[in-house]
Image (tube, rainbow, N blue to C red; front, side):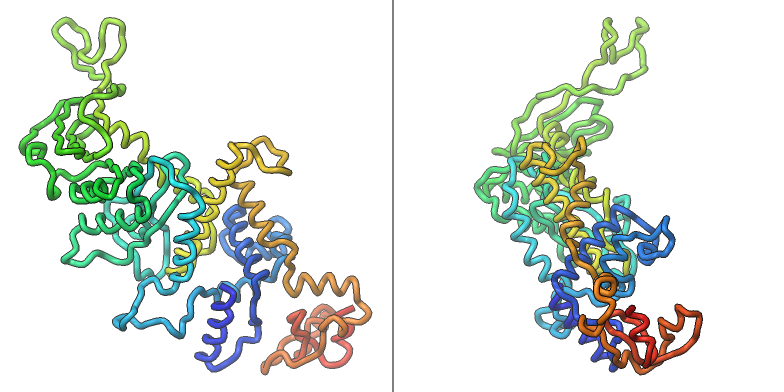
Length: 470
């Protein structure tokens, strides 16, 4: 981030043909503090980024002012970059990558997230949508989702803890010759790469589940389960709606071919399901909705003489699905509590802050599980929550870093006698004259092209320089 941000700032200045007087190269400490401030913005949320540096004591944040100036934060946001923009292939060229702008980040995190946490037996594959604004080239339209248009990411998460092992970004729409089933086939096989022969249990949504996919996973040594569309290729003909007819509540039919079991049942609505990790038959009774129709003797059909309601038979595939199809939802709940980064017009920034936020959630899950729920050392509260973890993380990222203004304010207090010894000097700031800060403080209006670059202020030649630094 540091290297490419500095390169991109020079690239932008060369293209515009003029230098940016308010930019100077960044370093790792400053970039770490910048990320820490973005994390804190998700906890202490304000409508506009500039409000964190407001002079109002009820709105402005003293920690933000001490870390860096509002202008410096704005410049880092303006030139933030992850890739070499000068070598970016144009659309249509050989080697074009729609995710080129975040490819270095994806290459780093793919292995890190996978190696940091050993997968448990039950895993969930599902999609999440990233709320985004601006011009979005990889956005997708999802009419059946609460967020109809956004950035889609497929995730492989642990069903028990919500840890995200791997995430795959879907860019644009599938081509005309690419069926929906084949898209789900490619997504799942790429997410579970490296789990072959370990016989994990995968739980997927209806968009992904198909007979060819479950057969492929079973050959690779992976069990799977999930609802499906009865019209898909390979689904048993006898279980299609036209052959099954209207089912009553709790009624179900099953077909088995080898380890693959197809189930159609009705609880609230008719559901078709495929599984390779369960046997056919009834394994559980779930509480059903009480029916108010009465028979001839005036008693309810769904209640016995003791007043207890009859349950609804529940086949094992649906029971396992309902118990374990929650990993991505758990991860989303933790991630949506606190956002990282500010809204912008660049689509790739949403992916950048999404992955930063995802890594924070993963780190919190690992800390929570490694300590068995016990708070870390030095924490005096009753319960160590994700909010406490994020505050500590941001504080560690910022550390004792202070930007030019914060450091020089402290230096002026300690060494007010000789500011030149500590890097202050009068030099040309820009071609355009601006108001002298020292004269402005005294109620006068004088302009100058000279000033102090460390303090980032314009000063008149003469006594204003020394007077200001005292």
